[in-house]
Length: 39
Image 1 (cartoon, rainbow, N blue to C red):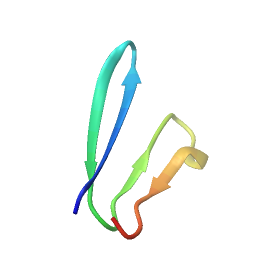
Image 2 (cartoon, rainbow, N blue to C red):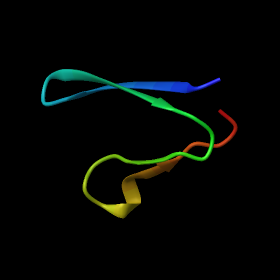
Image 3 (tube, rainbow, N blue to C red):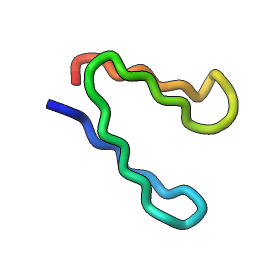
Image 4 (tube, one colour):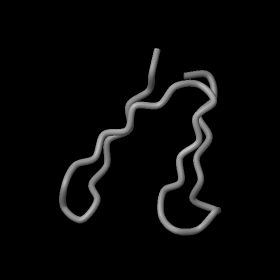
């Protein structure tokens, strides 16, 4: 099943739908990258 991540950016809600193996960068630096495992 996909995983949904909800967060607010600039005051508006953003919904990310992620499946296994996706990687998402939150913010501008590489340290903020999130890898989705076992979704």
